[in-house]
Image (cartoon, rainbow, N blue to C red; front, side):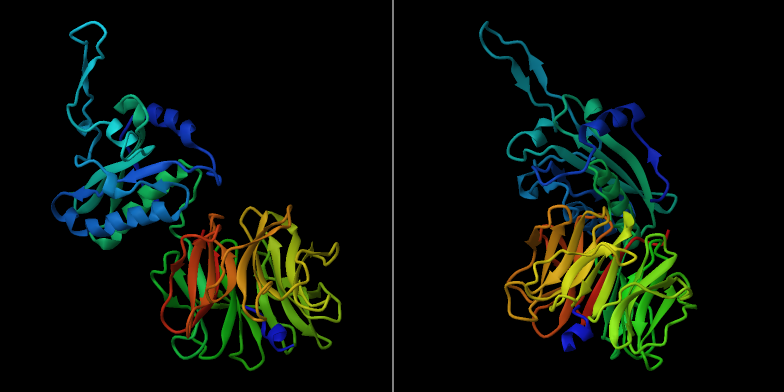
Length: 465
């Protein structure tokens, strides 16, 4: 969000298949998926036996969404699937090939049941197939899950994954095993599952702005603070155990830190200032960068994570906020400054030297955030639009060429990278309220996560380590 100052001035797993067969296939598909042609995968609707069937709709929806939303694979349309779908490797029946009756004629192929070419050939034309089934064992849900490379000549060489997954015999247990199976599939393609990650955000749905959290898919939304005041600008420690934010609960703004695990407030000694905001943990979790008013100007500052050893980073007659440290280079940071007139994005060392402006000087820039690999930046910018109408951009730090991800829909701000480096969460005012959305980092696959009240300033973090 444009700051007010600028605005005003996996569970245990049992291996089923031969480990050698699995290892041999991993080298076939390992590595990070690039912007080129993505492998295709078919994901059948699993069935369950007995009480396991009750939550199969939840299971199938979760498995499909987890794989589809990761952006690493192209989903084969279910309408193209064969009528006979396998549940076990034993269901595959190789066709019989017999010699021709007469010389010069092709061999005769006799179909004996489902086979790999049903999936690799038309109309499906997929590369991989996820299949299996669920059952009940000792009162628990058990998933038998397989991933096959259907381009292989036989069942033994086709198998990439063959595992058991266990969960509670209810909807949550079904989601759990589906997510674990999906995570194993995605790992084969160098993609990372977002299961377990959290999004922290600001919501006014209770009548006051409080800090909330939710799962990566918008589930399990819960309030973390109860100050009945204005609490905003959350930041999360690298280990996911602490959340810092600005609050006006004590009158003047202060930084406060809460334990995510216990909810208790942790000690932080605030400087005496009329402005203390935009907190950011350093990658080692030992220090805090933030902005505070000093001698009439909001400047970049740093302190230990308890507020001790306070020191000033910037010393200019301009407003400077939003320090963000590169997660892969703790000596490098981004920040927003008005030192050149309008608010623009700059990069410098964390001691405030070697300053470089990254944006052109057009419009207003806000909300910079680093991708997990420290090579790409997401930010909000009004370039080319009416003042105040922000959109989300990304920029490769080396190339310095901005790419616009949102356009023509709402006021889009507060971008933050997901731990997988593939997704971005952001806030957007589309209509009368501001809500939180996610999308792939190419601007596609936009999904709304919140609906109640106004929700903004999201940050995406790994789960507690």
